[in-house]
Image (cartoon, rainbow, N blue to C red):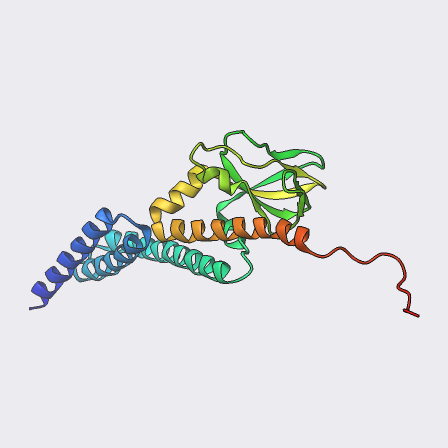
Length: 217
C-alpha cells in the first residue's frame, strides 16, 4: 500500500513538472514548479534518493521566491494604476545610469531601445516645456510606438541619477506574464493623459490680476 502511494506521488510530481514545462506564463509555471518540487522531495524521501531530495530542496525556495517577485510586481502595478502613477516597482529590473546637466537622455526621432526612471535630479521635456523630477518614467512611449521612435526630447536640467530598463527586459516581463503588459500599458496611457492635461490646465488658468485695485467712488 505504501509502495503504491509513493508511486502515485511520483506520478503527480512528474505531471506537475510536465505542466510547468508547457506553461506559457510565469505565474502558473512557478506554481506548478513549486508543487513538483514538493512532491519530488516526498517521493525521494520514500525511496531514499537523497541527491534528488537535495536538488528539489534547493529548487523549491528558488521557485517560491520567483513566484513571490512576479506576484508582487503585478500587485505593485495595480496600486500604481489606482494611485499616483509611481513606478518604483520597476527598479528591481533596471540598471543604474548617470547623466550630466545639459545631457540629452532621449532625442525625438531616434529609435527607442530603453526607458529611464529618474531616481534623483530634474529633467526638461523640451516639446512640452515641462520640468520633471524624481519618480518620472521617460522614454517608455517610444518602446511601444509603431515606428519604435521617440516622440519627445528630454534634457537633464541637473545631474541625473536614472535607472535604465531595456526594451528586451520589457518584452521578457511581458511574455512571462501578459498581465504585466496589460497593466503597464494601462499605466502608460494614464501618464500620457496626465502629461497632456497639465499644459492645457496651465493655459486655461486665469492670469493673475496686476496692479492695485481701487475702490469705486
